[in-house]
Length: 272
Image (cartoon, rainbow, N blue to C red; front, side, top):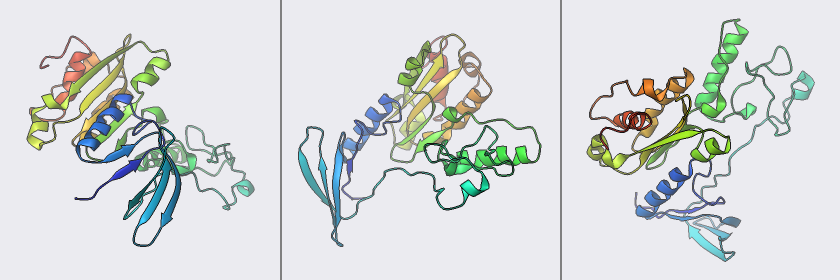
């Protein structure tokens, strides 16, 4: 849109909660688009002058610097808003992190009170809150329900290109002691990505080496958020990559990249 963008990131890479390969790919895309990103950077002050803002910061090498911009967007996360609403009076327990304490069925320590959404600090995303609401309603109605597997919830960063993921990163899977198989499909090899004019990015999958179930997936590219449901459904019902490789994907689609990864995790990719 013709706007110069500068990012000051406290962590040592963009999107530090994502797979390291995702961070590296996104930073490459940002730089190609002319976006300046400073990592390992600590903001000292933000001064609003009305017509502009000035931000002072300390860089990775300890150097103090300032930058000026028309607008500053401060992205520092958020925490549950539970103060002053009488939770202690109602007998609702709050965790050390300041969130409403719930069990797998959204029940609080007060028998007649349930909690869902950001106040629980599980995964603070709208679609997770909706899923929690379903579990709570089914529990209240005495209907059979299913607890949520929070580490496997899908998540998306809506930037250009999109970043979509679920489950464990490669680093997390190895740290947890899993024996894993890893497969990566470059979007450069996708006919649909070429047709969309967005050839950058990749699909990366991590599977359990012994059982073949997906442990996580990490995607960068055009509209990759639309590819997550197939993967999270497979994880929910413990489908193996051998079973997933039998699922035929339409050509030409971005979803073919999933199929290539499934094949790569089993007998080997066919079209790479």
